[in-house]
Amino acid sequence: MNEHGHGIPVIVNLAALASYDGVNDDPIQMLISGELFPGKSATTLHYIENLENEETGEITKSEIQLILAKDQVTMNRSGHYSNTMLFIKNRRYETTYHTPYGSLPMVVIPREVSCDINSKTGKVHLRYELIMQGKYASTNELHLEYWSKESEKGKKNDRQETAE
Image (cartoon, rainbow, N blue to C red; front, side, top):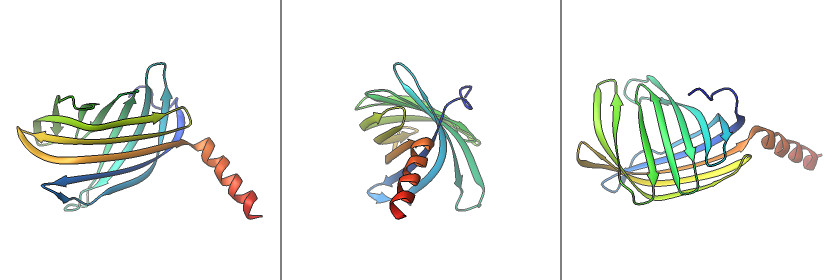
């Protein structure tokens, strides 16, 4: 991800939930640093996820690049597990999920896609179904908010002045 290192520093609040046959998996919640790259037709958000494998305790690092446009989101994931997913409401997207154990065919069917973004703050909401190797795997939701670290400093200063 060659843009890394030259963007606007942001805080990313990420919440994700997957359900399998109506049973919710443990939710994922992260508050992490990222970088934002505003563009003419799309904005790119870059951040790194570190997830712990519950069975082994191993930390898996993934670099995430979200390309955010008015009615679509593209997610590029690289690391031990990698793929590209395109989210356009109700448009089926076929891709490959690459793992250390091999590659699997995957289909993404987005049911909700919304982006409210600018160069200081933004919100993204995705709800989608995953089909792995031709079989329904899960329904997933992703809620993501970001705000510039600069605006976060302003919020802290406002709170301090209010408290005095």
